[in-house]
Length: 472
Ligand code: HEM
Image (cartoon, rainbow, N blue to C red; front, side, top):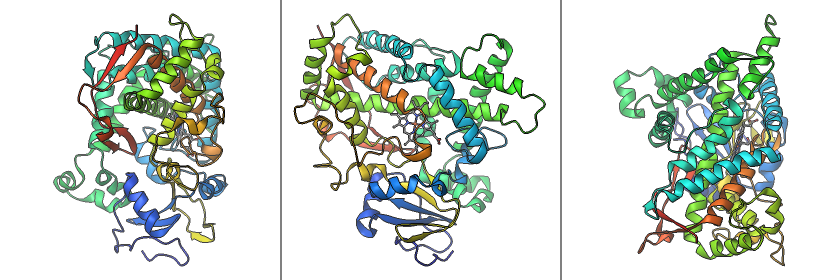
């Protein structure tokens, strides 16, 4: 219980309980202001160290002793052995599954022109779908979610949904319900396991209902369904997608008890790609729509750039990027300004270690405060201003990638495995919306008053009705 010597400073720890965990940026900013760039915080027996400085975070995440994810991730695993997958796994299982996923995402087009075509098919469908609202003010439409899902789901499971399909409703209901009901209290039993032994009625009162358990169970059913279907139709001579490639690995290693190709790991990989690959891009499209409506002057300038080089009957392509520096700068500034993932996906210390001279005991969670880094005046001028020009050169004709202070995709050997795909989608979907629509607030609505909410660690603009007015 007692804080070891020479640990980083932090708030007073309440005996046994420590302090509540948190997801929001305000609490992080409070800790940074009061305790400095490296802060220790404890929940139950679990200590976390928060890193608020870019260079410290970059240096720490490059070290092998901070490459693991904490045990708490196994709570969300649908692998019955709880060891497979990429996002939350460790050691040999992680190495095996990450390598497999990266190789197959690349083979399936990540960063290549034929995937660009698939993205633009979705972008066109999105443009058509928005037309159906006839200029009415609508909340962020489900089509934002389905286009993102369709890209990753075609790569993983050869499945594409119509943008108005009712089939996706169950999945959307599950993820929305989870996002809305999940609070820091839902996580407490994962930090303090003894709380899980409280009587059911007390647990329901204190932690809400068993939202994590139900979510894991229901996602397991969805993923099991997709994998079972693939096993039924599997043709070794004609692997269609990532699931088939994994089944191939499983078949080829049949009888080898040491093989890491396992059904449970496959279920978990599919589950993770589904979440990491679609929810993130969906949330970013909400930000894009919000920022276009909030800052129409940028929308107009980007429309001028696009109209000068792309005829209206052709979709913007990745080859147009050099001529559309403001569009790229806008998407990267959206990533920085939103800090959609407020904190980097947690890491854990695999052994006693140190950061900047402070002692970090084995098992400590290492949490990089992406929002705080993205709003740190040491790295960004006027950090709370939405200012895409910060990513343009002096002549404003060339995009310049951020050199320091940018952490949206994490860092080190666990850096986002889908970054290239995410950047492709973000650029092409954003360009398609700008090329075909003016996004506007309804009359009398002042978007500068709009609130942002942090749900289950993702920071998004709260629901706001916007008008998508087709350009003539
Ligand atoms: C704008 C969209 C996205 C953002 C902001 C984002 C951000 C992140 C971040 C911050 C991490 C943790 C990195 C670390 O620990 O240092 C991560 C991990 C990961 N992301 Fe993304 N991501 C996005 C889209 C995607 C997409 C489209 C995929 C689909 C393939 C994906 C797959 C993954 C995976 C598999 C990991 C786990 C990597 C590992 O632990 O080895 N992400 N992402």
